[in-house]
Length: 480
Image (cartoon, rainbow, N blue to C red; front, side):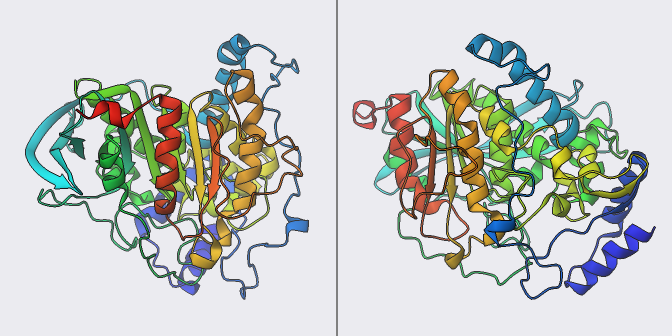
């Protein structure tokens, strides 16, 4: 109860209104885990007494990361076959048990229905749009209905099959009156609340310097899917007894190893890919996943666990995404264990923010895995880590340097599997980010920090040709 009062008081002080159902669900998980008190997360307001650290000399209290190519028995992994059969399963198990949760084996089937088809133009190119609903079988618990919302847009002037990007968020296209899903209080579709939003000054929406992602993709001969993540799983602790998680649990609270929203959103993207595999106009071997902020986290998680995805664009993902948990910079593990964001993760993740519990206390250093291993699970497939700059609103809170270090620490797996990495030869402990607008785009693992804000929009013009090169996709040959 003491922790609940502290959390509610902090929420009120920072102008947030706690949802009683969220608070109750969070406390239920703490009780299951035997946690009496959690450490409060740092504040994004630099004048606050508990402000986040932005001093690089203090940023690495736990400098040694779990070695991505060392088995739990201490043996080194030197062969690709051992990565796939031994080390990768170890990492997956740790993430599922302690960090992100497990997708239950009894998740119901999804039946996709095309509810509307229309023709339009995007830029100079004709397109065909389809609005779809993914009906999840709820016969086991009719009280909860899950109907996933998806829109598919394909170029009509390209010889198929074409590559497709699945994008988390709600977007629409001209002349196709498909309703765009709404994300209240999140600054627009696809952007998300953002890691640390509400903890510092809000940035003005960036002025687009390039055509929208959809227009760039269609011009290059790609298709695009938008998937409404809230139609899969609500973005709140109160929503954990609803959506796909609530349906599988028949409206009951989660157990500590159950999946959180990030895995649920990833599950939804995988079901979208199931549909794309049935569409002859789509090259299902060249489907990518994209997201920004919390949906950047979800995009990385999706790619890491579902090896059918060919490419990922990870936009400004921060803590819980590409940022190292062990870094003391900006958002921390303790922010994700508090009631505001815990629902993204497995219940077990709360243990690593525990100050007082039946098991003592744990910190980020006790985590068996870290973000570099989540990136490594994408290997040897295409992974593009994207960030903006704090001056334009991509807050320091996100820890750009810590995310770069994670990408560098994932390089050995890319090399082991015969793929090209970032090309950084230094240790992750000493490697420094390239300059703004300097991309490391020569390998299947890529990095670019653009000069915009909390968005990946400025990187699309670099991402698309990079993906084309490694997917061997020629837009000129595709068009008659």
